[in-house]
Image 1: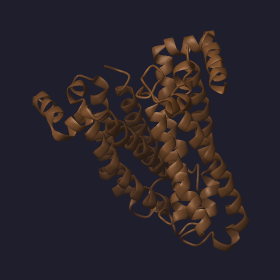
Image 2: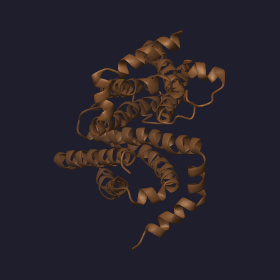
Image 3: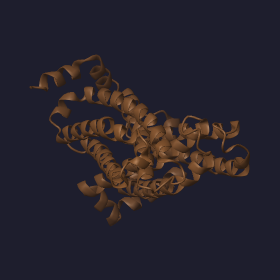
Image 4: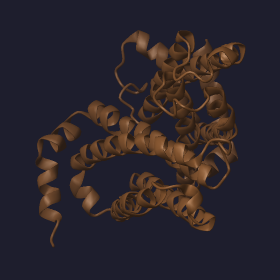
Length: 160
Length: 186
């Protein structure tokens, strides 16, 4: 499927126009909100996964920590996606030819599928009934995936 | 006077070998910046959970002092990495950065956030036995927590804006803004 026409349209859309024309709006409502949402999303991933790895909050049941972290993960994800769409629209054609953009989109897709199709269903039940090695593997995989999302995201700005 | 001294210091830093080596290395500079940005997840992400707990929005059933104590170490590790990488980023571009109004606002916000954190910890330690199992902290701690979130949001925003030169010294700036940004007459 040819995606270039969609990216060309995105750049001429209302969002693309606002982001392109008003640098201040792009930097504050796009980049800064994206970074703040990244802090909360990363914080929620770290709090949950480091608890699953028995590194922090060992005296708090892991189910409680994971449950609350997931609530904030969802909030942060909404802000990350919204601000990300706004930023990408302003420079859509440049993004289309940027390898790190596609690396980030791939990592983000893997991350979202991993959270909602693997991690969440697995950890919804009683954690004591799950093999501890599986829990630790899920935590490590989660840390790795979200680190990749954040790192490839930052490198979009350094390439192209 | 202070702006002249700061600029002289920045120019001296700029001419050191380390500064040139970092700025001229594509991978070194960008990995330092990436590390600086990524540690906001470790430092500010954890801090956000502590502040949200105080406000009653995160883990209200878990003792507030337990959360604050247990996430303190990773949060401080994140802060130290963030601080070191931040110093290195400044070291790589000292002249540009010292004359950035955003950098200056960021430093002021960091200072206020630091004093707010000291005040917050002092109040928390003094009063935790009376409320730490409550879903929300007392009003003065909630104000500190909200202030902390606001100040760090400001630090992130101004940090990001350093990259933009809208109000840099080579622009046509009002006199007061030139002084605030650290511009020095040739």
